[in-house]
Image 1 (tube, rainbow, N blue to C red):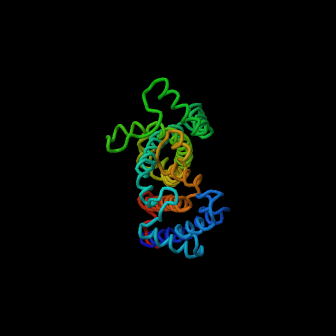
Image 2 (image 1 turned 135 degrees about the vertical axis):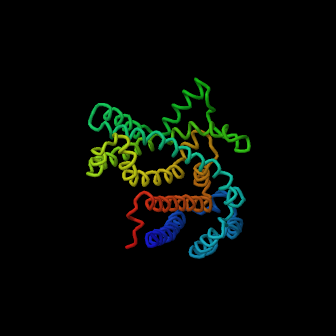
Image 3 (image 1 turned 90 degrees about the vertical axis):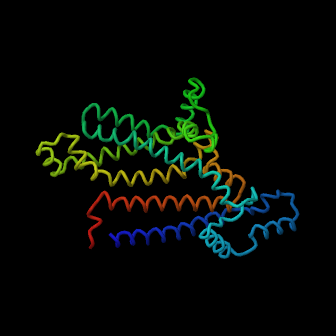
Length: 315
């Protein structure tokens, strides 16, 4: 168990290091000077030079990388060129929307996908299976931003059950914010639930063909008792992998949905940083997203220890 943990921890550290190098240097090679962009084409050269010095752009890229990465290690993400406030303040103000939205979407996609996957696997090859898999294929094919606009049209404009966008703030109450995040969470959850249901079905079908499952059925267990006690856990390994990847996608990929619903989240912050050429915001927030992706995948790897007892055996 300890060797498995430390091997995954080593991969985590190396992944973070190489990700920081890639993010920093990819953003640094973007053509154009942020100082000139912020001041406009008619700015005096002396003014541009002064702003470049203030923003720390007058030193080498290696020094900027070292200052940036050591600052992030102690929680100092730098100061936004545009907003003139620490990036950490911008992130903390927005993360209270993006993370609950991603968790809500993961909860909905899992709640929808696992029963569908089990039902389809138990009816493998018949009309019920084909029907449900057809719907999941449709869920993958539909763009989530289009589905989001349909949800707004039906549930906000016609039925008036939900607001069309924005969040009131967590200080206004938990359930009122949960209601405000329901439509964007459903819009994000639809393609993820479709993918997860198909993975669950495939993994469970493979498990149902194993000898131990047939033995469990022969011992007198009903189909669903045998699935619960013997097949479900073994089918969870690929499902856990997909859930980890989905959380990462939902955190990083909610830019369009947050803009459709006017949500002040991390996605909109990245979009605004790109538009305004606020490089320190873009590289710091993207690095945080990559960090969350790697951490979630690390936690998924640790969850394998619970799901698969073979990993707990010392080699």
